Length: 115
Image (cartoon, rainbow, N blue to C red; front, top):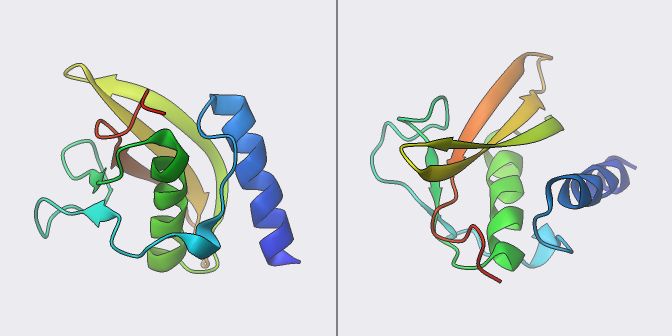
C-alpha cells in the first residue's frame, strides 16, 4: 500500500511540476548520483545532491531513489523548482520516518530540460 501511495504521489508530482512522464524507481540504478564532496547531503543549495543523469526521463526518478535510499519510510510532500546562480535545483519537501519535515536540495543541471 505504501508503494502504491508513493507511486501516486510521484506521478502527481511529475504532472504538477512538468518533469518526466513516468517514474519507475524499481529499474533505476543506484549509481545515478554524483556527490561532489562528503558535504553533499542535500541540506542546502551549497550542499545539494548532484544528479548525474542526463535526461529528465531518468533524472527525476533518481532524485526519488536517493530519497528512498537515504530517508527510508519518508514521504514526499511536494517539490519546488528553484534557481541559484542561474543553475536549476529541485527541492523535495519530505517528512522523514520520525515525522520531521526536511527540504532536500538536488542540483538538476545535468538533466533539466533534456529529454
